Image (cartoon, rainbow, N blue to C red):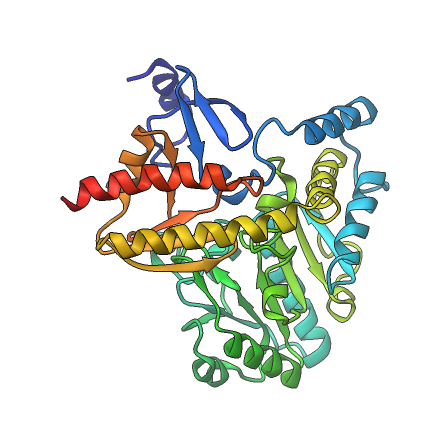
Length: 396
């Protein structure tokens, strides 16, 4: 066993089945292991490293902030937090932001807000939240209850009461589940861990109408599909449908831990001082990271680059499907794509890694493509050629 892996195995809890790979450094869309081998990174920390590695503007701003202050309590205000909140509110349909440290925490904040809203507007018994089958919302007890995949909930019962699941993209099943006890509907515009499944436009339109009619909250989990991943700043913009609450994380910090739960005013008003908090939420370093990511996306043309290169990625994946019988489907939006194979993808991902391409699965039969948003056509083509060679070998 490689010495660093042996040392890690001794002291780190076994909560991941890790690849035998120790990543030491990165530059752009490439990373290197501790032995100096180079890899093209189509994982990006699982849709986290929006600007890739060693981005000069990102580093300069983070170092500058470190020289000012690294942390202060939310008992006080800090300037990067205010500036990031202003950017998020100005560029979205939401009115207020709550900052935390991860996607699961953003979902927890949304779950709490939904129940506070339901009780405030509809009474003490309005506490039920409807989520989707095959969804994924995080690993905390509340977020894992909202997750619609039993495999993630093994041996964790009893789970949080008052959360039920219905089939995704099935409006009749959703309508049948809504009662006077329903306070919110939670869904991913694009299911990520569930296999890269985008919502149908007509479905989301109907969900929005249903929530408006019943005065219940429509909550989008955009932890993976938000912050430029679809070619729009937010995934909901692809559909032209505005939710009441959104959960963000992953790409927002460009690799620095941050989460955010945003809400329209009527929902945000359900929280009062003391209802929710986060010691590290809105940390000036995390918010500086978020500011740089948003500025690169909105002010420096990165969103347009994502739109252009995502078209190229989809075209190349569709071309690959035409020539490879192992590929059953190509789906996704922007730089959040998936190919479904007629076999488990573990072997394919392993062989691609051996050839210098890092990929990640989404379920047993789907390979997910969530590269850094700064990727270009040449780098996409390099990845496609490695994948093509591995698929060709496997098909023989």
